Image: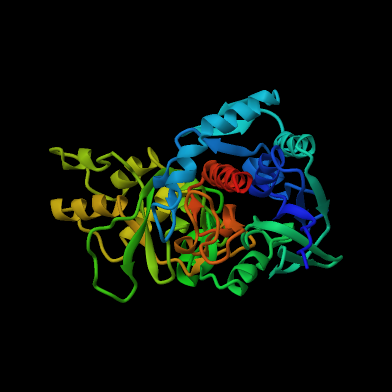
Amino acid sequence: MALSEPTYDVIVLGAGAAGMMCAFEAGRRLQRVLLLDNGEKPGRKILISGGGRCNFTNTGARAENFLSSNPHYAKSALARYTPADFIMLVKKHGIKFHEKTLGQLFCDDSARLIVAMLERECAEAGVTTRCGVSVSAVRRNAAGFSVETNASSLDAASVVIATGGLSIPKLGATGIGYEIARSSGHKVVDPRAALVPLLFSPADREQWCDLTGLSAEVVATAVEKTKGTKREGKNTQPTFREKLLITHRGVSGPAVLQVSSYWRPGQAVGFDLAPGKEVLATMYERNARRDSGALLALLRGLFPSRFAERWVSAQLAGGEDWSNSGLAQLEAALHAWTFYPAGTEGFAKAEVTAGGVDTNELNAKTMESRRVPGLYFIGEVVDVTGWLGGYNFQWAWASAVAAADALVSK
């Protein structure tokens, strides 16, 4: 008896950045593409990104800007679909944009324009989009796959998982992508909150959190040394020169969000509070004042007054030493303000999810499972996490196009 034809060539699960991009790229050359999402409307996370203006790519995006258990995995997709390619799409739709800083591109107007662009491309490609559909399982069948939903069972020759991670559950984030991966025999690198504010310990919170709202430009790094150990070693983590913001619970700001992706419980984070500056140099001069007033005056030239006063108080709490050695220690402390976070603000405040489907079990050129032919994983559900500043969107676009190209070449 002949096998029945699947209803769809491909079903894409998740109408976010990666899912919509993959759907219309595949839909341009395939006749039967279905895009499903559990929310009422597509692109919910896009709408809140970049403060509502969508930091849709970064002109400098390259594999080095991504964190993964396999640092080489993202290279192929990123090289084949570049920021310039997505910029061409944005220009095609007449969306005006600007570079804010460090290669970050934002819409001049609303992020809604990016969502509308993706919806229009899907419509023109003949993609069928259904929202409000919850997926419970994906199973192999004689025709390819069956996708079990709250409404019905759907058949497809191929399935693309673009369900995202666990970040921002109020927008409908679930772990269904990881469940599908595990049920099909894939390993999942433990998901964790990334690009997320860090929490002070109770003692640090008491000391610093009344300064909520104060900020300063710093160089931040996740320190590899773990609390309670003597291992120092060379720190190989990336550093980020951006703003630090004190909050009512800990620290945030771009510098902190960046290092949070690399931080692990029990490790420290460090901040150079005066990058590139020798702050206390004038205190070594002949007849220069060497006291707390002179120190405070210098720091007020760098930081908000309340932060300068608090920092001086904390540093001199154990006693004052105005010798050359003491000044050197104070200078060193300015460039290595270190503390041990009690944790993060969690998935509720995380911009992305680190970890995800193990890339060692996926084809880097096609995003296809090495275990289950015809099953693809793209975007945030995969163990590839970009820096803050448009990198995660570029990974969504690039991984989506890689999967779509593979689908249409079958």
